Every structure is written in structure tokens, then in C-alpha cells.
Amino acid sequence: MPALYLSHGAPPLADDPVWPGQLAAWAADLPRPKAVLMVSAHWEEAPLALGAVRTVPLVYDFWGFPEHYYRVTYEAPGAPELADSVRKLLRAPGVPVQDVPERGLDHGAYVPLVEMFPEADIPVLQISLPTLDPVKLMEIGRKLAPLRDEGVLIVGSGFFTHNLAALRHAGGGAPGWSVEFDDWGRRALDDGDADALLDFAHASPAGSLAHPRTEHFAPLFVTMGAADATGELRAQRSVIDGFWMGLAKRSVQFG
Image (cartoon, rainbow, N blue to C red; front, side, top):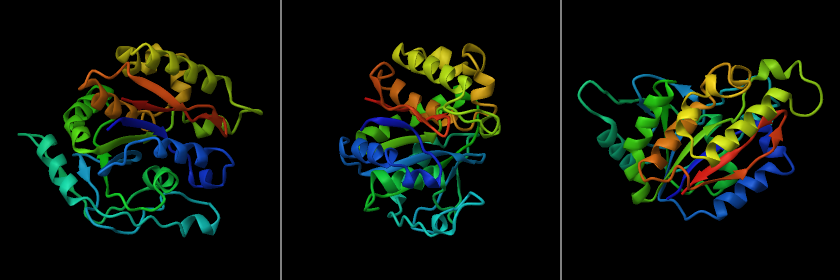
């Protein structure tokens, strides 16, 4: 299976005239996954945690939206076999893996999945970000890479630029810092420059504005690790680009 990094948007993504169709077309072009392993910007927990392995209610981890966004459901099957595989791949002496059986999919996971696999008939497992250290996250991705040969779609779900506070002061269109970072990131991906991406906070223009915290860029490194383990860092393409409410929605497929 390929490995994906996608910009997941917010609940109103469903009402966008373009983006849902882009996600649906992307999914239609993929081999059908046996299961989906999601790593979302919206779950930071250490040690690394596995979410529910059975269907439980979604996590509506947002505030101030119209009521209908809180009525969205996505009752995908649980993935206990995938959870067992993840434990075997990641557990090691001094490296625990915990279970959080009541933790449902958050909006970083279900918002894109609703558009990509609307039938909710593919098992889904979400794991936490146990750290924001890019190097450590890439190593986690490398360890998870064998799942791709078992038909598992590994998805890192974040946002290619993410600074909501700075957007409040922006004028029309995408702000300069978002455009600059997106262009830099595109070129670094095209060059397969893992070192630059890992050091994005210093190597990129406007890095501190594009990502004042790392959490929305961090899932990219898990995806990169899953690609690097099979020598596919350069075998990538941006499937979706452009901007949404000033944020870069660049989304990338490796392999």
C-alpha cells in the first residue's frame, strides 16, 4: 500500500465545493486497504497509545461549530488484528505501548475518512503521537512500514501549514508565510530532502509562523518513515495542493 500524509481540514471541509471531491477521487485511485492506520495531529499521548479496537463514538474535539457537525457519525469496524500487529512492531524493552479502549476517532481522523471511504466498511485504528520529535516519529514510521505489505494504509493526518492565531490578522487570500512554507515544503519533498524536512523549524522560511507548534506537521514524519523504510522518499507526489482558509492543504502520497 502507499503511505499518505494529508491535510485534514476542520468539520466544515464537508461543505467545501472542491475538497471533498479531491479526497474522494484520491481514495478511488488507491488499492482498497485491508485496514487504515491513522496518526492524527489531535491526539498527543505518551507512551504511544492505541485507540479503540472496536467501534466507539467519535471524539468531537472542536468547539463553537453549528450543531450538525456534532451529529456526524463514522462507524468503521474496529481493527483488533491491526492493533496486535502494531504492538508487536513497536513494543520493546523500555518502550511500552498502551491501550485506550474508549478513545474514538477524532476529527483529524474521521473528517477525511468520511470523504475518502464514506461506506465506513474498512477497519480503522488510530494511534497517538507519543512525541513531537521529528526524528523519533520517523523511526516509528520505519517500524510500522511492514504493515504496508499486509494491505494497511498508513495515514498521517495534519495540516501542511497551521497557525490559526496568525490567520486572524491576515488579509484576503493566503498569507505570505503560508505560501512561502508550502513552496519550500513542496521543493523539499520533490528533492527527497529528509534532513531539511526534519529540521523544518530552522531550514524553512516562515517555519515558526507556519507551525508555532509541531503537531500538525508531525504526522508527516511517521509517513516519511514508512516510506523511507522501503526506499520511497523520492517516490512521492502531491495529490492535493492549494489553500483553504489561508492554510496550505498540500497532501502527499508516497509509493
